[in-house]
Each structure stands twice: as structure tokens, then as C-alpha cells.
Length: 79
Image (cartoon, rainbow, N blue to C red; front, side):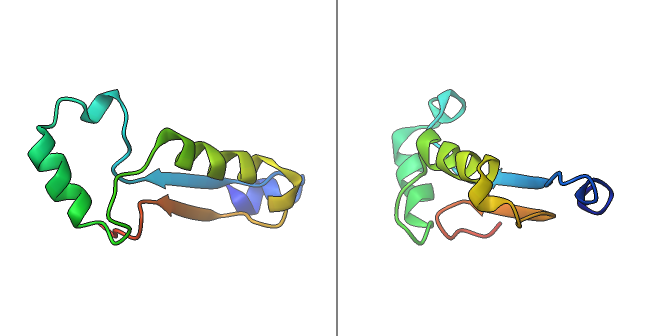
């Protein structure tokens, strides 16, 4: 998509969130969430704001030359 749409000045990127504190993970027992967070190099799960900040940047003119990327928001954890 980045190759096809780039000629029209359109950037195409994907955001790949890791463990983010949303309603989806509320059902995970606290002990398991702590264990999962311990495996993340930054030592914590992410927040919706962490993801939103990246999306806002990608949608801004400041990211106008970034295209064709998958950007992980996972605190350094690589699945």
C-alpha cells in the first residue's frame, strides 16, 4: 500500500500494540498481569495514551516521510 499510495502523498503505516491496559486485559488475574509486565523490558504494561501518542505523531506532518512501517508499542517486548 505504501508503494501504491506514496505517489499520491499518502503514507501507510501500522501500529502493533503489546500489552496495553484496556478492558480486554481486565479479566487477566493481577498476578498474571504482573508476571507479563515483568517480561517487558520497560517493566510495565502500556497505556492507551502510549498508543495514542504514536498514532497522533504518525498522523501529523512531522511523520510525513515515514511510510511502509510496522511500529511496535510494546515496551521493548518482541513477540
